[in-house]
Amino acid sequence: MSLELEPARTENRKMDTQTVEPGASGAAISVRNLFHAFPHASGAPMRVVNDVSFDIAPGQFVSIVGPSGCGKTTALNVISGLEQQQSGTISVLGKPPEAGRPEIAMAFARDALLPWRDATDNVALSLELQGVEKAERRARAAEMLKVVGLGDYLHAYRGQLSQGMRQRVALARALVTRPQLLLLDEPFAALDSQTRVLVQGELLRMLDAQEGPVTTVMVTHDLAEAIALSDVILLMSRRPGTIRETYRIDIPRPRDAVALRGNSHFNELHENIWQTLAEEVREV
Amino acid sequence: MSISTATPTKQLSAKSFGNSLPRWKSPLAIRILIIALILAAWELSANNGWVDPLFASRPTDVVQALGNILPTSQLWADAGYTLTEVAIGYVIGITLGVLIGVILGSSRILREACQPILNALNSVPRIALVPLFVAWLGLGMGPRILMAVTVVVFVMVTTVLTAMSQPDRDSMLLARSLGASRREQLVKFELPRAVPVVISGLELALIYSFLGVIAAEIVSGSNGLGSRMTYYANLFQADNFFAVLVVLTAFTTLLTAAIRRIEKRLLHWHKFEDR
Image (cartoon, one colour):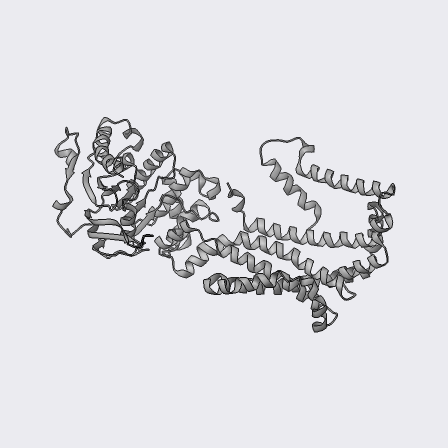
């Protein structure tokens, strides 16, 4: 999009969230005035999310980055329905948030693979809970595992897989249901830095292999990972978190997560955004 | 189910380890060596009069006694009697234990209310109750079975409570995100995770069932291997006493090995964990 209009431009564009039309119709996710607080030892509730509003267009990959404890995971949990919504207006694919919707898939930092199931049956688990018949779900699971390069590990158990392989299985389990919306909570946080980049590449490949467009929201503290994967980055302030900046990432797709790391434009984006993020990280 | 089938699997697992140890350093060889050393020390002590063979017997005498008593119908009748008691006590104890365990495991209030009661009951020296059990149930199988039940129940309650108190937070989060119903959570996520703990509890419960039955037999009645051992001990026939003990140990070992075998088949995934 912006790349075709301004192909020579290497600087990222900043957008003010307030300029986005409130409740914009056609958005995959629309969040308005979200506040959230948790009970605190002191007695007074601790506010973690402070008036967050944003819209996410269908098919976009959006990352929410911010310092630890800024409420980004809480925001994601409210969108997913895992955390009870306390205030604001939220529309997720046209409906209020609710956990366990079949058109929405999730993946977490820890793979949560069931150790008594082999890789195929772990991937098939999500289809199984949606009532997909056994032969079909196993076939689709095997196909998905081949997409992430685990064709030789269809019958491997969790204990036989490396961390990176396990996380690929977890991502395959999320995407095998052909979701319209993918919610990721620090999906690469448990991996070492090299494996992390490789699995990011696998995620991009999996998303490309999907038939329809998949809207993705990823929470991460890793800015490089957010830039490599996203169309838009929402930068949150420290707690109580609010959206401080919105960045549009104009790196063309398909992207190569590994090769990107040496790219000068990538590094430039990283430096720009990091300056703002560092302010939020530093002022503790 | 013979002893010879148990050894090849051991060798196989050692082989798959990759680092090829010399044969004499295998666990099996070391095991045989330890047993041989103990038997030799025993034999030597008896022969040199360091212990009185009348009370301590000696391995060669025990082997001879085994040869004498194994063909007798009396021994097999006693063995059948004991095994029946063990089996009935085991099944009743497990059923009750799992039932109580599941009930307490699903209700925190009940668990907190009953835990001290259970602990107190479990610390009762059960063997002291045998005369009372005999007064209730006579001299037959009754008191022995009841004895086994009172021990096995507690093993299984503890096992089930342990298994149920370790929910995996990651998989519970996954279950919720996948929209699993309460029933699906139990069947697909929680119960399979509890299986390894429950199986090791079943193995322990079997040993305890033997323990309860034999203890009760020694104290009361005249049927069963425990009573047989008391009989020989009272006659100062230590070689026959040990021969019966060998038979008894053979039974418990074979039966626990059978449970282990089932466990291996059921938990083929388990050997990959624990890293």
